[in-house]
Structure formats: structure tokens, C-alpha cells
Length: 107
Image 1 (cartoon, helix red, strand yellow):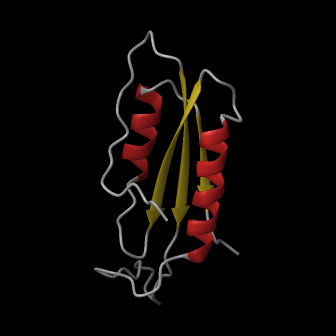
Image 2 (image 1 turned 180 degrees about the horizontal axis):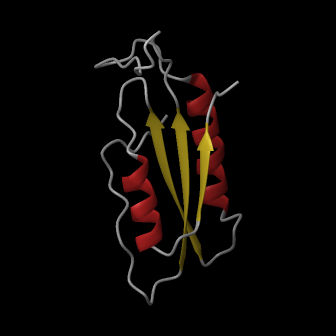
Image 3 (image 1 turned 60 degrees about the vertical axis):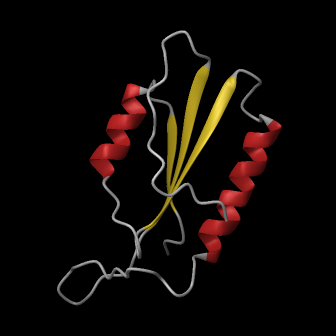
């Protein structure tokens, strides 16, 4: 899985082609008090997140949204990385407001 860790969602110029963000978030589990369980490094990567990221990379490579649409992928595994929704939304709005935000592996 080519997770784009630490990559910031950059602002695009007004003259650029359309940009579409695909944000995939794998939520962590929570303890009895409601706090998220997080690890410095998780021992087992999320297979579901890896598989869906690979499918999204394929769609990105094949330009399934059209030749003038750039698909930018963002993956977050909350078990080892803090997810800041307000930052994600702010970055999407700055770059045109087109996105799919998916919670991965939620049952």
C-alpha cells in the first residue's frame, strides 16, 4: 500500500483542471471510556484500507473520472495516525470542494 503519509492536500491554482479528492479513513477502536486506541506503530496494517487504496490507484491511473480530472488519494489509519476532520474538510474546500470521504472497514 502506498499510503501518502504526511502528504498535505495542496491548494491548486484557479486555472488548473478539476481536482477530486478520495479520502479513505480506517477508524480505530475505542476503549471503555470512549478514547481512541492508538499505537505509535500498528503491528498489522489494515488489509481493507490497502485493497481499497489499490482500487483507487487503478481508477486514478485509468482516469475513470475523465482525462481532465486529477484524482488525489489520501489514506488515514486512525490506529496509528490522528485524523483531523476539520483539516481535511478545509483542504478540500480550498481546492474546489470535490471529494469522496469513505470510512473503511466500518461494520
